[in-house]
Length: 253
Ligand code: 1GP
Image (tube, rainbow, N blue to C red):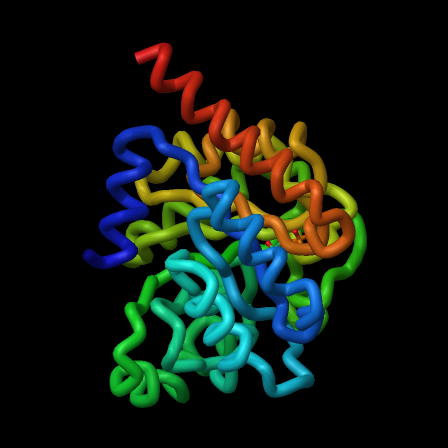
């Protein structure tokens, strides 16, 4: 079954998902198997694998370890057209719709299209929206784009609507890795009211409370990277939050 259908079905049944972001540059190979075991035990739904800058060459090794220890899907979260690894399950084909840099709206896509077509990866067309987080993030610097202001939910809502009308299947609102401020619940709610496609939210979610806020505001998938790198216990806390939000809906319905 295709991942996109899995994600759409979950949304239809109000089932939230938890994605752990694995930045190949930051993987500690001594503790990585333990992180993978904890992910299986706690019901992590997806691994997002990628980052803006990948300076080492361990992407395939990281994916091989994920496969060896888990059956959790690996979804590439590429920074550019070089970050394609055919051994993953799928790729977020990101169009940076919050920005006005044609290179990240369509340029990199043209370069990578023939390689992707041959790769067998499931392609997930995703409207990627960078949201200002209180300090300049790597993505904003590398992509040379201005993020959507933190306190402008209507700009985010209109951007997401346009992305959905263009046929994008997912909207990813990202405050950037290690963001000072996660995307606000007000902005998530505004986007939720404006589009039907599943919404992914990430960047600066470093507590169970922030995870809960994002989920209750309308996020379908939350992504956590930095917080878990700093405190592996956070994986358990956030997984429990996702499960309790899911259980709550189950009881309410
Ligand atoms: C960043 O959305 C991801 O692109 C996750 O961010 O590392 O801050 O959790 P964090």
